[in-house]
Picture (tube, rainbow, N blue to C red):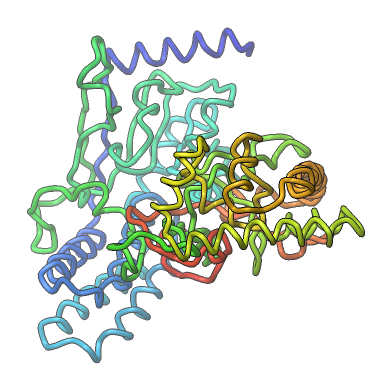
Amino acid sequence: MSRVAAVNERYRSTESVARHGVSLLVVGDEAGAALNSAIRAVARAAAEDASELWENVLGAAKSLRWRLAFRPQPLALNPSIHIAATAVHTQAAAIRPALGSDGVALLDRLSAAARIVAASDPAVGAHLLDTIRETGPADCLVVTDGTLSRSEVGAWLGPLGFRVLSPGMLSEAEIIADVTYVVGPPRLMRTSLVTAPPTPEVSFFVPSWYTDRGLPTTLIADYSQGAIRPEVRVFEIDVVERSAATDLAEPEPIEDFAPPPVWGPQRSVTRDPGVDEVAARKVLLSGGYAIWMDDGDRIRTLDPSQPAGERVTYTDVSAVEPGTYLVLRLGVTERAVLYDATLQSMGARGAVVEASQDRWKHALLNRLRSAGRCEVEAALRRLGVRAVEQVEAWTQRTLARPQLDSDFRLLLQWLDVPEHPTFSQATEFRRARFRAASRMREQLEDAMASADIDALRIEGHVRVDGAGFADIIATRVLAISPHTNVVARHDAREPFRDEGGRWLE
């Protein structure tokens, strides 16, 4: 199919869904309903306690519930359910000694529900299989919520001849099919499955305990003329009368339904950073890592969709979001490695230039410590320095010099540091750093060319061995903290072990 033909088919599919609506196939799931009700009871108790004691138990339980909604394959092909249920029991055992009788009762209820869920095949799976078999492999698609779900569901349905795709694959695939079956609640899926559907018919398989029957919408839909708002046709399958296990409360907001990150206590959020400190957000990463990400200009990232040789690049810090892949060195920051590589590339000149850099940077650092940032900025502004807001950043050894020549000359004059040879040596260091950065990028590209990109997409992280990069990891951003913390400047962007994102993997 040509690109033009594919676009035309997508428009026809969109018109059909807008006109005829989508189907919601609601499957009765008593075991899942009991788990959902127990989770909501624990969440209410945790909110009343205003305690972090329940954080990991809730995280494990919500992770189990999420997987139950999105991975309906039989337990023999469903390792996610077993792993998540085991985590619930482990976390429950850890906090049991700290709870009173009411808390223990809630914990027992949650553990029992998790045990039942892990003992029988997900209810949605059997009905999904019957439906797609009736439709036929050539006429339907199965869409999961992401890459890992696609891998697991594909291991079940792929050998039977069915096409299993993640939402990200739909824009690239040349698809010929009549109907798309989406595994999971519509509200938790991408809007494009409704506004730009891949086929003329779209049906969602949803467990009965997820009571939000709405469709996903864009932020601007309420303000748009002609926004696509398809009708929802609900079909119940094996749904019995509500039992005591079914929670009758309003549907949970999406942010409460999803497994939560565990941020830990906030630190130093009420004061401005000192000279040797920086305000940074914690970024949770796949593989059990995290970094403190400051507001610097750029950070090295990897785009697995690009061909080998074009995957490694720099991305603005402001553009980093969950799903971005960062390329990091374990045990050291990228900036520190680049600094050492730059000096090494300069040979004997490296020591001379380093000493020159240290002199003016230490002079500036001493002024900042004695007078304070505000006074230093004010003095430099009176002199005509334009980028005064960067004054603390200029003290970092990895930053060669102020960007503007005029700013650097005025700064040296104010510090009583001779312009010659300081100015030319700092400029020499900056040029050498550009060359070293280019070489490092080429070396990283060579190393990443051998990385298992499929494993990266599925597992979320991959270590790179070879070409001197045994300490490099490409890892997916799982969550970014909504608040900032004050940390030591040298700690920013250096990976450290942190299990706060374990429930998001």
